[in-house]
Length: 157
Length: 117
Image (cartoon, one colour):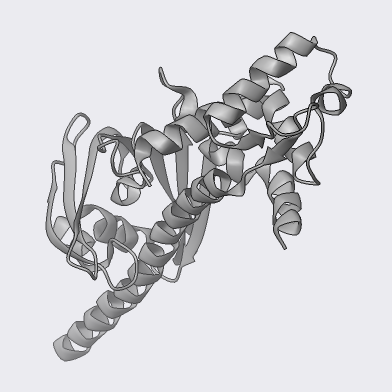
């Protein structure tokens, strides 16, 4: 396996086109009052959100599941290029594999690309290879693993 | 499902040889000799990989038959796969909500501009 491949296998990319100007998408993404209105899966709400929007500043949000459980999201801003890019370093607790959007030991890069009056948002998650190597394989699971999983699914039928 | 449990699964999946072994086992249980055949590595090396997979609960080895066939155990794989899916869902659904919210913001903005005129 080449290094490039190995890198690729640690990543997960999600993109979305919004019918809104980039400035507005940036505002909705960075202003805590706005963030609380949409962050989290369907049926979830947020009880608090604090954002110190500067490199080294922290992002803290408490996400409430429909069953009442609170899932904290913790990150540190590693890079801020208004209105193009934000990089978060997760500070999530190991007990919360999803980290309410910022999984433990992951680097999440959000890119806002202008397309006329629309905006393409790219959410790139890089699972870091730490002392325990598990995170490095997360995305590999969904990419290189695809084929093996298909066969597995077949086998399980 | 604990994070530690997941860690063990992911650590076991870190190696391409081990992934290939699992892929092979997805099409049915087999002997160690048969598993080793496609790889240019020693039998002890294969045994080591099998131990890692076994400790992670990804495979089981029968103690009944002399040739101790290996069998794939799907549960930990499913849990690992569920995690990725859960994470993806978090973002897909958050972005759906953001999309709706952006539309509301723009509608509000339009109304305000309309009033100004």
